[in-house]
Image (cartoon, rainbow, N blue to C red):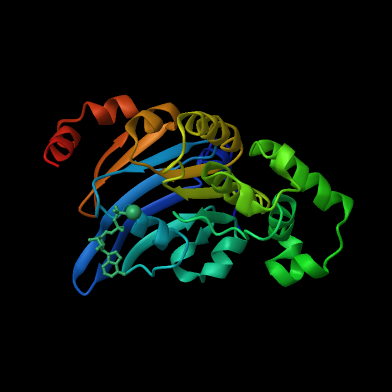
Length: 256
Ligand code: ADP
Ligand code: MG
């Protein structure tokens, strides 16, 4: 492979994720339509837009759950549109769905442990050795997600918000470079929202975080950059301030 020329575009100032011309058509209906989107390292990028705008479909396309009709999704040097869901996870993309998928009967520790790359899956977790590096990693992640005091508790006893954090923790165990969260604070209390904002700021260091969110106060508190989707198309992108004052955005939101 070629290396960047001196004075040229180096690896560090290229976007981690570059989406260009991305389109998916469901029987002629374009849920995502010729979209361009760029996300940097250390960036919390929030995607907003009215219901049906294509936000969840966009995450489905990035994680390979839905295949693009056309366009490109370049993650570092990897073209994701050509890869399977499993390969995409392996390349460093983690995605949290709206409903938590934790194992309620297992403890917080066990849930995190089984997400360690070596212990993938329930059976992996039951058979693999609990080595010190796994314990250290579980403890570090538990601290990140405010669950240090809950490691021995079964997950069914956690609050709704704590379950959401646990699922984020399970993704963090795999150290993804790109983390995608679909409405992470839905159903959370005010104090849980504040802690989640703090968590997102912390975990965006050294990686990229994409968040779909409706709660504008929350968006304001976390977003480095905002993209507004409308009917599958890019309506506006930039800082929260710029986007909020964009007449096109105001019209779409007042019109709903
Ligand atoms: P959002 O998350 O912004 O609310 P979605 O991405 O879920 O919107 O959906 C965007 C549009 O695409 C909606 O009109 C939805 O009905 C449609 N859609 C999503 N997935 C499919 C699918 N698999 N087949 C057909 N239509 C779909
Ligand atoms: Mg959605």
